[in-house]
Amino acid sequence: MSEFSSEQKTYLDGFASGIAAMRKAGVMPGQPAATTVAEPVGPEASHLKAQDRQVAAGGKLVDQEKWKRAESPFDGYARLKAEADAGKQPNPQDNFRWRYHGLFWVAPNQTSFMCRIRIPNGILKHWQFAGVAALADAHGGGYAHVTTRAGLQIREISPESAAPVVEGLVDIGLTARGAGADNIRNVTGSPTAGIDAQEIIDTRPLARSWHFHILNDRSLYGLPRKFNVSFDGGGVLPALEETNDIGFQAVRVLDGAGIEPGLWMRLVLGGISGHRDLARDTGVVCRPAECDAVADAILRVFIENGDRTNRNKARLKYVLDAWGFETYLAAVEEKLGRKLARVAPDHVAPRGGFDRAAHVGVHKQAQPGLNWVGVTLDVGHLTSDRMRALAEIARECGDGDIRLTVWQNLLVSGVPDAKLAEVEARVAALGLSIHANPIRAGLVACTGMTGCKFAAAHTKEAALVIAAHVERRIAMDVPVNIHVTGCHNSCAQHYIGDIGLIGAKVPVGDDETVEGFDIVVGGGFADDPKIGRELFLGVKAEDAPARVERILAAYLAHRSGPEEGVAAWTRRHETEALKALVEAAPLQSPRMLEAAE
Image 1 (cartoon, one colour):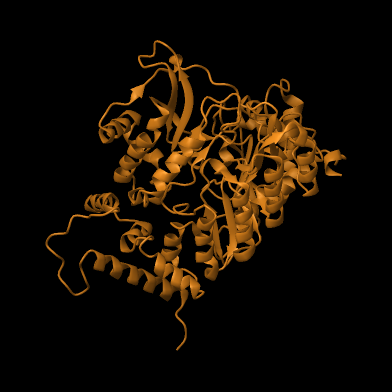
Image 2 (tube, one colour):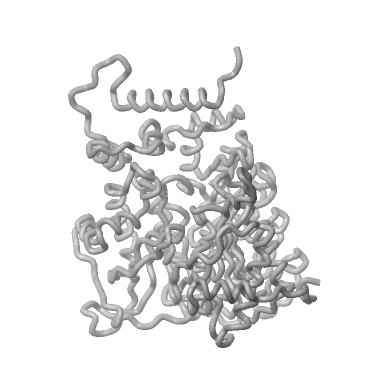
């Protein structure tokens, strides 16, 4: 007998899933439906009730909601593990369930799993970093990627290695639980937490508390869609909390605000840069110790009211758009059983400025005689050998911490003045650098077509080609952020870059396309939050480096001065006028760069 076709397999998978869901509901084919349905109970009850309400209102659950109902990914771990141990590739339903354990089956781009690791506030110990390298060697492709949520990914994991990776992470004090699917993703915070002289609060305890709050409450899994939470402590290095569903910003409230002056956390809501929106100030403030309770209540309102019938409209932003902020906050207050404190913007002390280059190079810590050293990486890519070597540098020359950033690089903290030369030399021996090149320091790229089926272009490869092309032709004297993302999920957050590129299929014939990009400009973050606007559509990948070169050449030729950054300059011009300036900019001949020799 021949094997089933892919269409037949998909049909049988869906049929089996439907039978499982009916069995769970107490109804089997050929039997009359029960006249009464038992009230859902257990940790998934609030999610099941939300599904039932939307179905009763005439909606149709998306497949992912049906899969959650048919079998909890946590209840199914033993089955998933047994099938993976036997070398079985997961079907679509089980691919989704594996994501609750941090594993993504990324075929057809790579016939393997990718594991996304939770690292609260992006900070881990040197031995944990080396431990991830060992797992990547034993069960993956021998490398890891630093992500735009200050986490790590291991790639090229065979089915048989799925459980050993997930369980091996626990052995070294890490976890991948809930790092994918419809869950709360890695908790980000200020990369320089606890060592930044400017900061208002150390975000590490806040991120850690929320991390364990998530891990130990199963009712907070299985949301309508993924959810991001971030804490910014007011230091010199941005946490990009404005791109998160929930952002907490440390502020000092002044006298006369109607509440006790002092340290509070300002609440911003609804960030989702891939959908062209950034989190907005709600006017709400809470004490640092109240962050968990406030975030929990916000989540529970979302669990009950987020859209489970349309994945494209299932994020918090869309509930806020439909209800308005005050209605949503009133529902949050009902969950909390109390009113939230509010403060007018003019009763909040100005926060300190940001340093866009503080994630690269040597910077003085709050602790006398100590420094953090930012190491540039190739758009987050790290071989296991480099990881082990960097772990040794952190152990022998620093305080033992590795601090990952949303800029896909890392910091070694606690380095004494006397050890700085040694750190620089040892980093250089690895083929890496601690110097803040204006192009490389702000270069961000997602995985792209190499390992993601949603991507329309090879983003990491393109980003490195663009950087090499531009830095040999343009002498930038200000930092520029170039973000390269593969699809509208915008993992590399192209809309907040000075220059953002998103993968696109560019027509070159009647039925033929090639890799390319749409280009946006004028994005911003931190103290200058802004969604960029489209400038060029359908630029072939081979032409993208020259197009970026022209944008930067036009900027240097027409800016009002170095104090006017790239984003500000682009915003000063209407789209067509900006295009004309860019297209008129001459291409430059390659120049010799000392850093490149």
